[in-house]
Image (cartoon, rainbow, N blue to C red; front, side, top):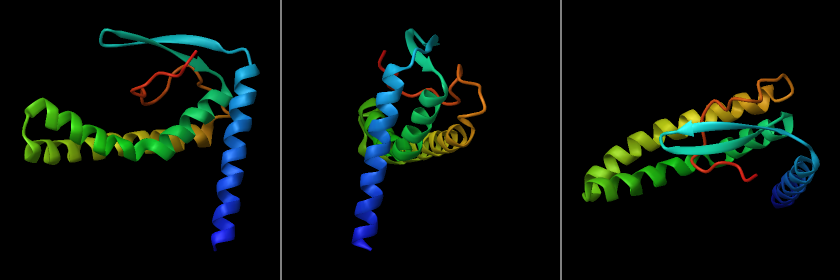
Length: 125
C-alpha cells in the first residue's frame, strides 16, 4: 500500500511539473476580471483550465480554516468566528471543489475565458 501511494504521489508530482512546463511555453489569451476594487488577469486555455481545476479540487478544503481565521479577526470573537467561518468556509470549499471537478472534466471542451469560481489569489502572469 505504501508503494502504491508513493508511486501515485510521484506520478502526480511529475504530471504537475509537466503541465506547468507546457503551460509556460504556450501563448495564451489573457482576460481581466474585476473583483470589487481589484483587477486580476487570468490565463485562458485548456492547460490553464485543467490546472485551475486540479488546484481547486486539491486545495478547496483550505477555504474552511481561511474563513475561520478571517471571521475571527472580523468579529474579534473566537466562538463566532469558528461557527460563521466554518459554515462559510464549508460552503466556499464545496463550491471550489465542485467547480474544480467540472473544470477538470470539461477542460478539452472549451469555455476557457471564465472560471466558475474566482480564486482568491489570481494566477501569475
